[in-house]
Amino acid sequence: MNEHEQIQELFSEYVEETLAAEQRRQVDAHLGQCASCQKALRALVHALQSVQALPKVKAPRGFAKRLHKRLQLTGLYRRRRQAQHRLALPHLAVLAIVLMLAALGMLIMLLLLNQTAKPTVNFPSAPSSKQP
Image (tube, rainbow, N blue to C red):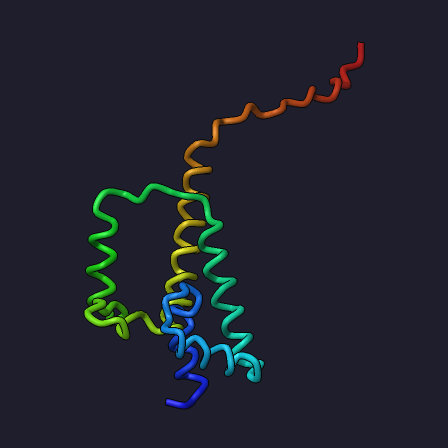
């Protein structure tokens, strides 16, 4: 794993401000000189802010349990037995996008379900051309 990957592995904890002081200094120092890691961090922060800005939608009963089961089956989910175990940055980005699309889909579905039937506009027909 190269230095960029090592730094990017720390981004989640960096954003959450849960890094040890020494690790935070390492990330800050690296970000001070690496434009590509600055861009990756901005993308992560933007994705997190986008997810937080989504409207709150109540999940169906049993959704969380089914989601955890699916994540465990796909290998994306690792339990946090130690502080170093967490979702990798690319997986977080994919998960954020999937959640945003799911929320958007639910929102559209709710809007369609709540939409009332609107009366159609009937324009008067053209006068008949009957000759007397």
